Structure formats: C-alpha cells, structure tokens
Length: 245
Image (cartoon, rainbow, N blue to C red; front, side):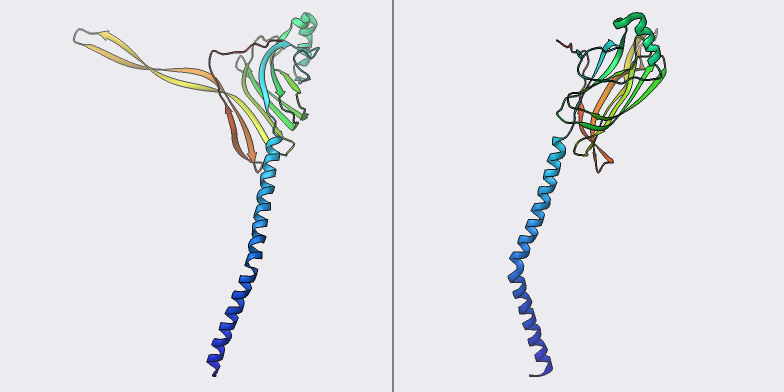
C-alpha cells in the first residue's frame, strides 16, 4: 500500500467516525435545541400575558360639578387644582358656595390594577386663549377617580383641545391615551342657476365647511419608544348619556 492509498483509507475511516458521532449525538442535540426554543417561547408568552393582565384602562368623561367636591358622591379620588387660578376660584366659592359649577375632566381607573408614573397633559381654550396644564402623579390606584377643573375663574364654558394620559403599568409597559380635537373640512358644491337672455347656464361654486370632532386613541409602546395603536375609540353625533344614581 502506497502513501496515497493510505491517505484515502484514513480519510474514509475519519468520515465514517464523524458520521457515527453525528448519528449518535443528533437526538441529544435535537432535544436540546427543542428545549431551548420551547423555553424561550414560554417565557415570551408568559411575559406578554403578564403585561396584558396588568394593563390599565381609563374612562374619560366631562362633568359640570361644584369646584369644591365635598363628598364621594361623584366617586372616590383626588381633585387636581391649578395653583395659578385656585385663589380666584376660591373667591367665587365664597360668594356662591356649591352653586359655583365648573367644567371638569374626570379620569377614572376602571380596572383592578394600578397605573404608575402618570403624566397628564390638558389643553383648553377660552376666547382664543390656550390654557396648558400638566400634572404628575406617582400612582392612580384601582377604582380611583381624578378630577381636573378646566374652567377659568368665572368662565362658563371652556373648549377642550387636547388631553393625554401617559403612564406605566405594573408590568412596566408604557401606555398613553390621547384625545385631541380635529377639524374636518368638507367641500360642498353648490349649484347656482340663473337665466340669461341667450341661454340657461349653471355656475358651480365650491364652499368649504368646517366641523370639529374628537379623536381618541389608546397607544402602547413597544420597546418603550415605538408607539403602536392598541385601539381607537369610535365617535358619533347626536348622542349623550345621563348618569342614574
């Protein structure tokens, strides 16, 4: 046997040995990879379920109620006051008592979970003046209600322009509720007919009409900075509800 034949035989033996090793350890490797993938999938699935179970949903309403909320007939919670206008409001309270009614944004936690690091941003307008208010709360507990007066002292009506509630859940998931007023421009074509001595013609005139609606959306944040709409709240015209106590 020359050197070349010896090399061929050695290569064949080595190839057979490697094949036997792969054949012997392939079931073990397959089981190990399957276990790792199953464990990772279970961890991710449990983490997603935990985040969903800890999500907090707020019910947002507007109410005209006394500036001084003296009992819990409207719901247990806290009233957030703007220190820039509080003293002026108090003067109206001294003059009119509970007859002094102001607009409130009412935010109620309707879940059994706690919202943490809550940042509330409110923008309202009155006679072309935009009023901005920011509030920060460490937590909003389960079934707690937050009352935010939006009226200026002595003002009977305010227009809500923007509302956002940014918070984190117990599962450290960031969520944000956004409600903003949008202006819809509808172009309508009006036909104006008139007669002339020569012929009857039609003159088309386009008139732009503007209407206003509120667009409400609840967002979640993937990786804490990519905003994804969780769901959008629908809106309709000519509709209201009345609370029955």
